[in-house]
Image (cartoon, rainbow, N blue to C red):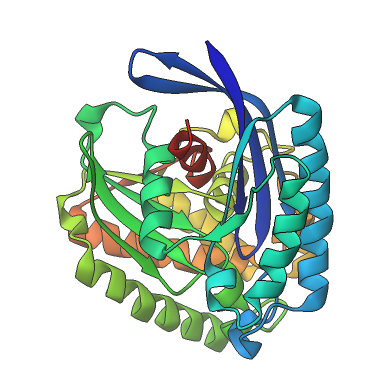
Length: 318
């Protein structure tokens, strides 16, 4: 037998929906996609500087969530879990956001509400979603969820998560703080790399990544880097999923994106319009990660997965 559930991941840059059927085979739940969708709403606009969610950012998120709830009602969803991450954790006015989400989600499932999850929970959900299709023999895995406001670094194996840390850095945060030029200046890029190295050093001080055999990258920055590296004419999630990039090729695509101006990035076929102005910041973080994982663990390639925290959220209620 199966039932239909929904997962919503509301991050700093995007809000994403997964509607899935849960099929139980023994004790193991399996997900079959019914609908996936992503919208850029930039909920974290200015949070790093002001400490509050901008009213217009909350409204953009409400519009997207309203449409998602309509889809959930039409699909006959019986259970939903919505999580909010870095931007909402940091916001002084987060109750305005939760009041809005309670009204919208309640239209689909009575009593449903959004919840702020800790960085540790975010990391564990990302890991669960990311490694489900990979052979356990490739472990231990280091899974990196490079988001808009935070980056989760998780070490685990077939028995689950061993260590995790949520670093206070993401593509939106680093762009707003360091990368103002179009394209950014050499000094801005150097400042961004220092900032990324400093914040990620805190993660590497907690998570023993030297034990990892395989690096898995998830979320929009990583999937966009893979799509650009593959030179896709338009974004294709099936082509991107489980792409393997040598660290040499990863650094090449990162350097290329960092050096581009806004119009050059926007002209790339697989580039989502909402990622144009922050992909350079994400590329800086990805390069620092590549350098550190090569040095600390001898890792030579990145596997990019389309399955991430969204799948982990769905599995958590399956």
